[in-house]
Length: 104
Image (cartoon, rainbow, N blue to C red; front, side, top):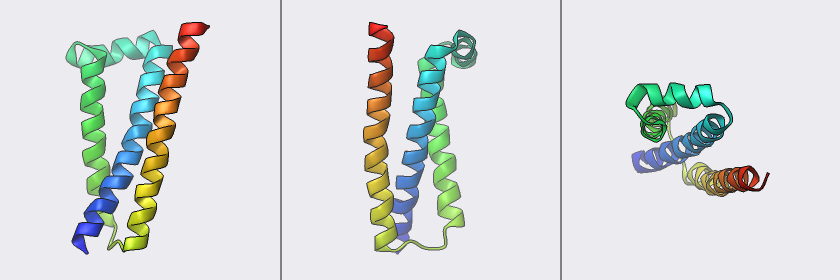
């Protein structure tokens, strides 16, 4: 069952990391000061965004892994289904944002 708990934690961590990355991406494009702030850390906003995504995944994973007592198959399937939905929504959000920025 520890394997299911890790899958569960990974799925929710990935979902939350997608939300963070989409927020940082759109925020960085809308606010030059925010993009400059991201650039100040590593020299380029993409590198900082990558580090933030790795850090957020690890932090969320550990939180779910530590605080979730156990995960059964049903909970794990739900977490994976939610992840699939947010992968699609994140893709649509970023693609839609850049299309909007390009055409407007």
